Length: 546
Ligand SMILES: Cc1cc2nc3c(=O)[nH]c(=O)nc-3n(C[C@H](O)[C@H](O)[C@H](O)COP(=O)(O)OP(=O)(O)OC[C@H]3O[C@@H](n4cnc5c(N)ncnc54)[C@H](O)[C@@H]3O)c2cc1C
Image (cartoon, rainbow, N blue to C red; front, side, top):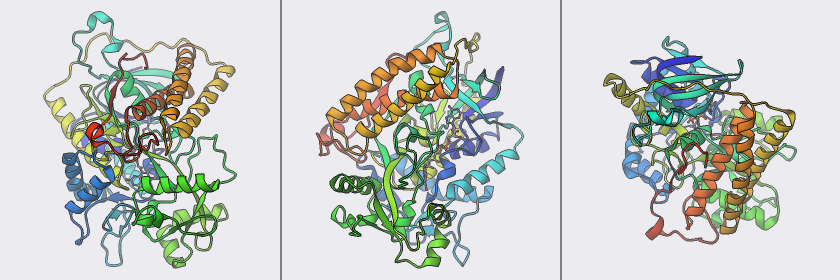
């Protein structure tokens, strides 16, 4: 089927939905999403959204905290822009119907998280993402000119490279929509759009241990890279220090590790070794409230030293009712695993959590490809730099989605698009055998192991060169499988995962220093002379993967 529309949005998390609501004022909008509409990283966000709300807070403090976490690589103009837009975006979410937690006197309850110098996390108990996603989806359902299609998997962006060579006029790349695999009908549709938004979220599933749900296979990063967009800072992967350690868990599965929110440390929880000893004060004067990279590296170091598999998070000295009231979801989830967090220590390990890099955009979410926008976790806007401050990502998604929508309004009004004749439909002739299915699943495990072992919390030149070498081998195999087999979600995700794994390992190998989330034991110091800049990469052989 061929569908022509003003705007195609790929992804139904906070970024895609916020954009859709704004764009529906002036355009016909299609949202395609590869699973159930609510299945997204957004739905799993617990802590909340950082914003300057309290009278004892101000923009300068939030800006300072963000810049400090970003370790020299934030774009100060972007930081100021996003933070100043924060309160308006919170107000919009409230107008849409989001129910945030309130104090007894009816004001927004503001929590504290690591790296923040004030209480500024607007939240809905410990299920903020779920509540925001609910409210946004509810609003979307009431808007007639938004069409949301579940189980529709975007394969590739449509650009000049899909046209016959004689139609190529300039070197500038334009995006005219995407090829989308309809999983239920098992056919590929051609979506032709005047503007396209990538809102595909993160890539945590590229790592063995992750807090990200199965959808987070980095599809948007890979699609943009294949299409020739500029991609930045892929080496900066944030590891959440405290994912629940489950001894019986099957780490081979794509099930996400359950997150014990940053807010639990903000609430006063202590990290302890197996013998009960506290250790965070040895690494940073802010102890448990230090930014995530410092806490994750401290845990990694202690675990390597002791050979233990986890450390403990301790809340047992806090008031029982307060714990249950503030963290009902964490309390329930842990209780299901026979851990009563009011009485027992919680076993935790670090896990891949957030990609600070992504598709490079300007202040309007515009990528280096004309009429292709990227917002949310898939984008690199300059807000996070080398490390993301907790709860700044939902905020970033909201602000950039709004501004990207303003920009598309101008593009549509002024007809700043030129969709050529002759965009071909997708041809799929391959087969998918049982043997191929097995190989696909094994390659996926290999990629996750490679990134965890060689491009994880602590890196070295040798580990990175191993990772790159192995990625190249797997890439060759995947390329062959992709060309020979019939389109399936499995092969598409595998193709994206290997592209993403390569981008992370390659970017990490380019940064010959340690900064923010990137720590290489061969270059343990920061090198401001040579590396006080983002790592930018662009696929040299457009559409030939890499
Ligand atoms: C456990 C957890 C807790 C977190 N807590 C917080 C927090 O408290 N505060 C905070 O600011 N941030 C938090 N984060 C990060 C934050 O949730 C994400 O960065 C943010 O939700 C990303 O939103 P998004 O819209 O960009 O992507 P997502 O919400 O992940 O949505 C991506 C969408 O794209 C779809 N998609 C992906 N690929 C394709 C494809 N090929 N075709 C079609 N559709 C596709 C997915 O199905 C999904 O609908 C947390 C993340 C996790 C995992």
